[in-house]
Length: 279
Image (cartoon, rainbow, N blue to C red; front, side):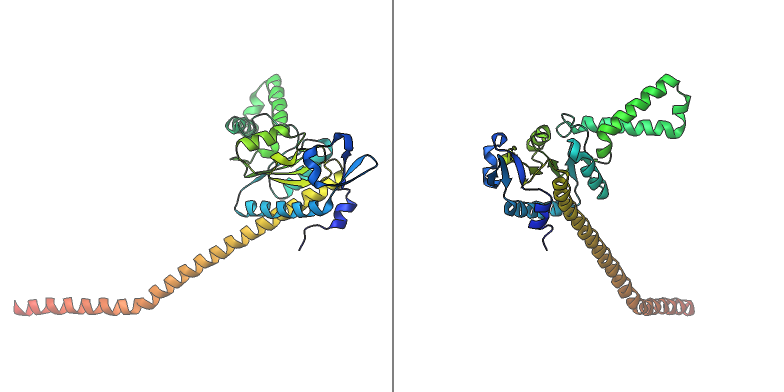
């Protein structure tokens, strides 16, 4: 069953590209026509590419790995943050820090610093500090939360990136390429899709378009998480059945084992009695 339809894409304005003078020639294969000085995206290709991306991202999540959502443009940040939180995936919506992937160890130190500040407030140490020190720590905590709050639970590099507007997030794309991390992205007519592993030709400025495409990806992630959960449950049931079968086998074998032990015991007793009588 298709995760979205041609009509849904049309209603969301996914087909509206940028002005023709702003286009990137590498997007030519995804452009249907030009109308009133604006490029129109071929929605048949958008449908195909969306399904490809959704299927691939589902398999990544099914294997137990994380997908990092990146959307720092104003009209996308809240939509993406809400969607990512719903499936417990990491996200960056404020500012992409240079080296967030290529220098991940340093980023982890900053996240640890944030958790240390939280510990200070919980164990009462924070209350013993001067007013000025508390204010400085509080400001630093707010800043760190703003920049790194969405990746606080990311303990290792993500398995893939999902981006809105590759032109704006070019640093994130470059870092992902350097580390061979697969990229999924909405690419508009002014973008270069050649550096993206799974490009989805779509309007990356309209909130309805962003919400629709991101929603499709989120559905695929939910499917992957559900299948992973079911597989784990099936494995647990199989293990439980195997343990039970083993226990039943041991129990059924127990009476025979008891008889054998009894025979050995009687034999030893008889030999002892014989030795006594001889004495």
